[in-house]
Length: 474
Image 1 (cartoon, rainbow, N blue to C red):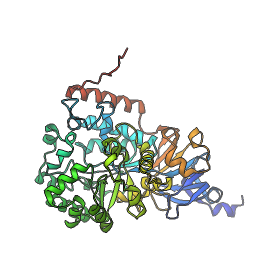
Image 2: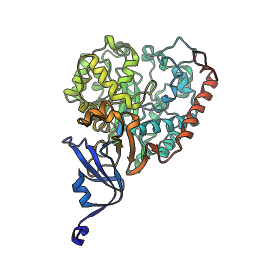
Image 3: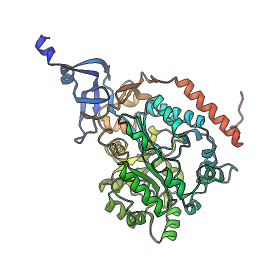
Image 4: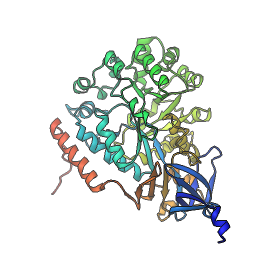
């Protein structure tokens, strides 16, 4: 190549080339043979492989081998430590099978337990193509969890512990309440108000992987005073406000009886519902609440696996597809990875919509797991798509797996077929944190052993028998 042409080449730290690029940019452009140039923590250009290979002189190159390259998925609602509940309860909603319920399990956690569970869940997320999650205020030790998140190399939003000051609506959800949980996180207005901004100090560093936001537990457990104070705190600090609502029909009825109005209608009247407010679940809203969603411009995080687990499908009025079509920003969350992984969420949403004969396209599912989830996190200008100037949170999938083929429709492949085994390389903030199907930052075997040991110890403390129902021979 002539010297003049070499002098026109730009340097970059990393060039991901020879990939099927799903950008999720405003035009939703796909590059059949594309490339992504990265310098430092940011994307500098996305385009055709032939053009970027000519223009850039990278320090390092990753050959995607015709695999799919996409923005890191974002789990918009994940009680990260609850992943450690797998196999402990037949159903977390059952309050009759054991004297120890799900709330007791949550309360019985130590800082070491939270660190172990978080590290395992973060590794699992990388394996599923996720680079960020939103933790909804269920961590007793955010410091221990944040250290584990940073060690693995993910992003996260964290919030103060269980902000609530009313208990009436727990009648509809008895497994979410216990004496041990309320002893560690008292239902108290003064405590909740004092802790509203507790995690916001993390936002002083614009490059921090773990940031803070405001989450009020919701589902009728917040008084007007708490809700309005939380809304003001979130707005003053330019972070989103999240809360659970519309979880089960009984919760909504209790709320109406107590307040004389439906929950979201009441929130709208209080000035709490606006376009930076995020309602999580919204499984059971009445017509007046549906109107409040559209009038306020609020966002919704849908947790389809949790919806299935509640057993309310027969009586529920499925609205997620309609909301999406009407322009509501609907994102996807796992809630708790009890019987699956975050990588199952889009498929669960697909089947839920099919069950109600109101299908949601693969394109819509990808929007819910990327750009819409970034919006729910208040980070849409930084994450959710592969565009110049955005943070380099990038996933490279292998084309050497059966589920990647046929490869005529990469959007369908990514949304509904490609599982954890297809993730080859993951970058977070421009750093390769997963390569060749393994973490580059932690010993995965130690992480897995750590959480298994933690769960056994925790069960022993609580008097839970982890023995299998079937005869087991050691």
